[in-house]
Amino acid sequence: MTQAQGQAESGLAARLSAIDHRIADAARLAGRDPGEITRIVVTKFHPSSLVRELHSLGVRDVGENRQQELSSKTAELDDLDLRWHFIGQAQTNKASAIRRSADAVHSVDRDRLADALHRAAEGDDILDVLVQVNLTDDAGRGGVEPDDARSLAEHILALPSLRLRGVMAVAPLDEEPASAFARLRTIAERVREVEPTADWISAGMTGDFVAAIDAGATHLRIGSAITGPRPDRG
Ligand SMILES: *Cc1c(COP(=O)(O)O)cnc(C)c1O
View 1: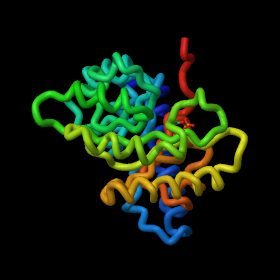
View 2: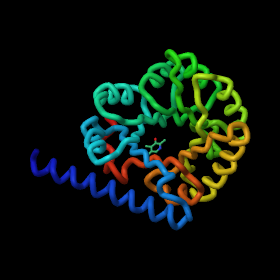
View 3: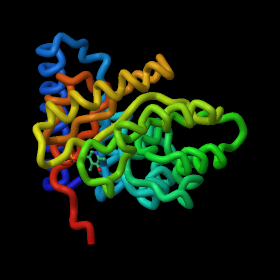
């Protein structure tokens, strides 16, 4: 290993541990048990070697937002016990590739995508899915409209190869994350009325994970604060 590689590595370890301390502090301040919060490291645009390094530091939950990158990384890292979370907008014709590689899909935002993921089931495997909710005023963004979250949840419940785990959202750029995440919490309660075990709330990124913890997030999706800046998307 070169000296530069060694330094990059210890930088990664230091950033990971700093974020985990901030998560634990925020949880305690919110009166929550840090152990009930899963920190997913979002590794998009970073090479598989970085994911391998994260694994050696104890990371087990990783997130990707593009199907091709998910598929190639899961193939390269097949020897590692990682849980792969798909968090990006998904095209219906990619559903079966996503299903083959992901352990959980956070971004189910329409009936047709749920149907396609269900049709892609092989054998009796069960896929964890979350309803992605659009918290912005822009209907073109990913996510179902808040008023439609419950009916999408009901649709998913009728598909036996999918297990509804909860809701996911990204905070809008033009609103305080705390108020956006408060709305998400209300939507999560509505979804739990139709499926009481669907208690995941996937929310919180580098810039807003403390607000998400305050609002009850169970799954944080943190990228750049841990990995460092993303390499050029090319
Ligand atoms: C990239 C991404 C993240 C992580 O973003 P950071 O700001 O780097 O922490 C979280 N969620 C989704 C859906 C993403 O695409």
